[in-house]
Length: 208
Image 1: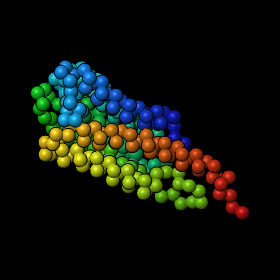
Image 2: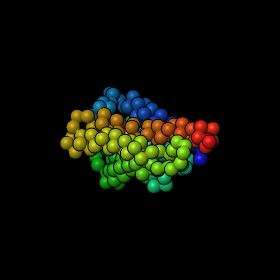
Image 3: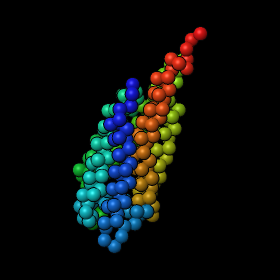
């Protein structure tokens, strides 16, 4: 199966929307915004200046994940479903913003937890072991497990900072969210390279 151009486009747009969104939204906050200690959600909170910037970025990010999940058809359905779930949860994060004055929101927190969890675990469930003389057409188990382990480390750092009220909550969240936004693009490019090798398979693995 080929990697559709629209899936590659959505995978590329995801990190651009997220990183561009938090950069532009932070620049619009009066008096400056500390991205090391300030969270992404604070930029879309009800009392944030031009909160629509981060809100639109999160909505776009979630939709991109759903589109990418639909396009990476050589992956296992379980992994693609988790990627899509992460996308839907990201949309919910935008739909349930934090209240004003640094308040908390249970729906927002639950949506964020589902999003971070699903977007960290999906590569491990997307991997498949192909049997044949040529190169694997999908994500290998080692690649999927490694990607998930790295993402869980990043998310774990954010959770520790959040639970302890650490001074780097914003930085750790950006590392985790940025890595999760980039992961589908890395997977799509990996699949593109592998599938190109498979298409050349009859020439490379001809039985004598």
